[in-house]
Image 1 (cartoon, rainbow, N blue to C red):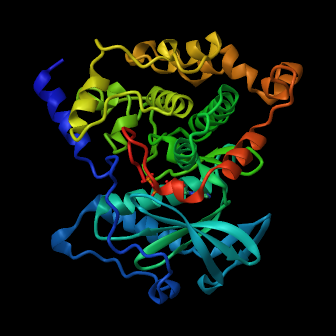
Image 2 (cartoon, rainbow, N blue to C red; image 1 turned 180 degrees about the vertical axis):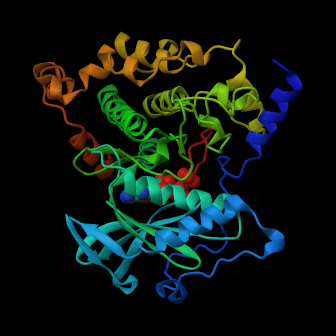
Length: 399
Ligand SMILES: Nc1ncnc2c1ncn2[C@@H]1O[C@H](COP(=O)(O)OP(=O)(O)OP(=O)(O)O)[C@@H](O)[C@H]1O
């Protein structure tokens, strides 16, 4: 490997705006401003001297999208909704691109994600991707979109409301000194996330590219769904061809290396899921994190250094099947890392497939009925809401 290129790619990654300490747009507020409530399609003709065809295409897509703005599909009923009918209740979360709030819309409780538009092409690309992919998807393992609103300076996506993301749960668990995610919950997350990722790949040729604890959501019934498609990409010949952003600490080694970062496939999401699961069950991000993100990324990208493994875990015990499954996901050399279809044949995955009847693991564990919903609700009951905002030491702070 050309060391100069490698170092350069690592520096790019560690300085990206989607680094763990995401930068937030300074115009984010909890409340919807009166400006946003008024829908006025933009006149977006760029001046001839500053013509950028890609930006023109994005702005055209935005104008086309405006035609469907304000039409929500709520429980099978399509209806035109006035932005004034969005009654914000409270903040659910925030990310690099905007805020997510709970809201009542036409007597339906929803999550409304507001993303702020600026002059930056990448910002518009990200917003449009999120809108487009959310509208496209129909999977029990992906948060459902009801529709969206487009305004001059922002876009709102109205979606199914979930109860908490894995990151918030992990923070609650850590600060209340509860047991980290049990293996059977990890199994349920693996089953749901891989089903969602496989659906995205097979049905829409989409790669998620941003798998991390904050993008995996729980509802009160124990359902697990993926969200946040802002940096997802469309693949050609099963390969992604853009060196798009992501969250560097969860990026696969091949995405950190200059020769391969613009040509990778869904196996990079397998790695990110592996790191996420490792963190949820041990409570620890598996690489040393210090002020120099560059150092962390160098360790991840170095194929000669060992991968994290639950084999060495001394504080908790895990089944050999789970350990093996995670070891497969965390193979540093992408050529040795399995794709979804291979992982879906692994016994650990199959144990959590509800269609397997008596073999379905969540029916009984040690003879006792065991449900993810019970676990989730007991964590919520036994921990404090304010802890969701407190970071965990040595863990990427992604939101
Ligand atoms: N449908 C939802 N229901 C409940 N909470 C949600 C929902 N969608 C998102 N959230 C919360 O809001 C947080 C931020 O959402 P999201 O990741 O979509 O924003 P983002 O700006 O794209 O963030 P990122 O910086 O991770 O890319 C999530 O981590 C989660 O806690």
